[in-house]
Image 1 (tube, rainbow, N blue to C red):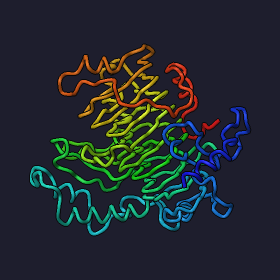
Image 2 (cartoon, rainbow, N blue to C red):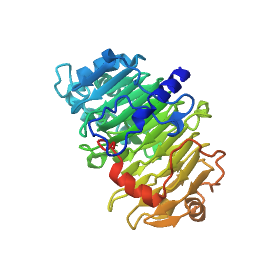
Image 3 (cartoon, rainbow, N blue to C red):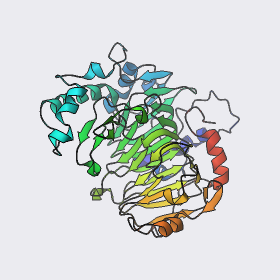
Image 4 (cartoon, one colour):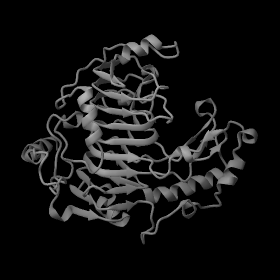
Length: 430
């Protein structure tokens, strides 16, 4: 399988070498990852569905067509081209479904809130008729919005306006997948669960990411735009003194996933954007979660851009934008046994956000950083973190135990900042 990847990558390399002035109508669906483009280029490379025969090249315009093309997550080489807007939360006739359509077994939010109000229910995990009804309702929604992606698959948007909305696109236990030139929007959970003991005060837990990798290997995500556009969590009400969250992550890479490159993508208007490694106790992730993030823009993202456990993550030439008046906690999360190698990233923040806010650590001990720009000025994130550490976080060392070798040209943060602002996101492949 790895030899096939390498041979096909070499054979199709010319596809990648089209100059920037080339015809915008060129077929990008058979592009493969360049040999040095991050961790997904290792161990045979990533070719997606480039080997698909003509019978397995699909153009889809609705959920039904997308489901048929995905073929239940089969490993058959396939190319899926998305044209226009595809709404995942629809019935078989294409009618859009809302939360009331999924609710079953007597579930009602008002009844759920009354049943599990901490003042009367206490701090026990929800159980009983309303929680059972919530689970049944959530399962009905999942049947529509969870879309499995199998090995040897390329999913690509056609033109500049391809949109998949309301979906949780799941690459689970699959190898060799490409997702490009596609807007992913609003993986909206109708039935969040109340977790009384989370964070000491309790919190709402949601189910869906716009794109999630679990046990996935050799994945290239490129020129994708992911956001909560249309249903921001900030506009949701507060229940039990906590925001009633409807979205989980924009892109989560967990469960032993490995050899992933995320490039030229835009992550926006979201709370917890990207989690790499989901548990401190998942020691099976050691030696995995090798991820490259380059030339991406994180805009109006509150936290996790990314938060990393265990993984060797190369983070270079990315752009971070925190608009005036927006909520912000941190960007880089250094967690258990993580090894982040950060180079030439640019941060733009309002005056209330300081350089010391950009990095937060939980049980993590290492962060290599160089070439960072903060509002146009060079800063040393490691030195600042350690100098302003109040004692609630561990001091960090620059020795992360590895040096990246798989990457293209690394521009200065100033150059990358301009290029990413112009070129990141769906509809902007040159």
